[in-house]
Image 1 (cartoon, rainbow, N blue to C red):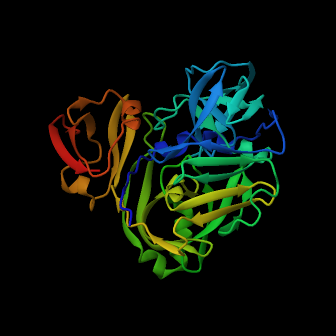
Image 2 (cartoon, helix red, strand yellow):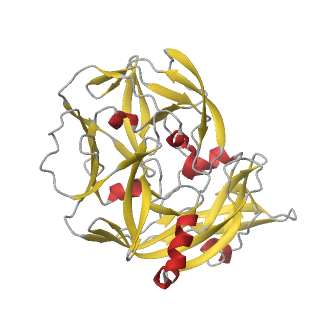
Amino acid sequence: MLRRFLGLFFVLECTATSTAQLPTSSSNFTLSTTHFADTIPVDFANGLLLVPVEIEGRTYRFILDTGAAQGMLNVPSPIPQKSCLGNVITRDANDNADTLKAIVMPPMKLGKITIDGYVALMGKQIIGKGNCDGILGFDLINQGISMKIDVRRRQLILTDRSDFFEGEKGERLKYHLKWFVPHVYVSPFKRHVDEVCFDTGCQQLYEMNVDAFRVHAYRSRQVNAQVEGRATGYFSPADNSRQTAEVFFLHLNRLKWNDFALTDVHCTTTQGSSRVGAQLLKYGSVIFNQRQKTVTFQPYDGQDSVNVGNRQLGVAFIPRDGRLEIGIIWHKSEAFRNGMRQGDTVLSINGTAVPNFQWFANYRFKDGQRYVFRLRDSKGREKEVSLTR
């Protein structure tokens, strides 16, 4: 049984997938070979799938993000640009608009395959995605590549052969494209289904759109029985925004992917789209079959269920005037019991000063370790709060 905290870093949820709602998506790149199948070693770290990409003799680390319509690079980026295509207006899952530059990358090697003409957006530094140089989006699959992700073996299999994954067993769902990224239907409650983006760029297991949750709750008492609590506060990714939102803390009896059940799941609602994230990869491998438009989940142990047994951290950290601030906190959380409050500014963690939100977003927390947060409240008083990750 795996037990882990779900941290509510709300602002991290949608930043790296801002390309998912582009009005257009370019996949006019070419591959150096056809009728291929290649196995690429990958790393699964901090809840993200990292893929080695070679460009002009240098190896970079890219996140494989199925919730992004196409690639993205940091600004500034050490990766050279082949040409500039102009600016694109994007909207993230919270409907925040931004204007990003679209560029064509030089030829890049992904395993034995060379991809030429790959388009990427130049975004602000990818929040919360430390130690990476960019994002590979779902356009790889939309272009005609199928893939199998197996983090237990630390490998990614890519192929353009339509029959390569034929005969593979597992829990298969049809996916449909919405904003050029894959969406499937899962069941968070009995006799209820939820349309979710299967987003490997999301570090959570599952989060539900708050409006969809309210519809479920209105229709069924058993849905309301799985609400642990709620809180209201700020979690907009826009710095200095004063957009308030209500968050529901849920304890699901089970989350079903076709006939496979993840039981004892703690999760939250979100203003953005419902999503199943990269944490699913801990429990089984996943196959995207581009020709059949299916995504198949293969449990590692071959069972029909797994106990997740995670816990709620119950805190949302947001940027505010260049600082790191507590935007939302659940009154039943360990953080609240130990003295953390909404509006507190985080000054340091384990004695190391927190200069800004970006530093915190890239901070590597370790499971089971105790962390001391030094905080300043709204009246200027300082205090220390200790939490276990």
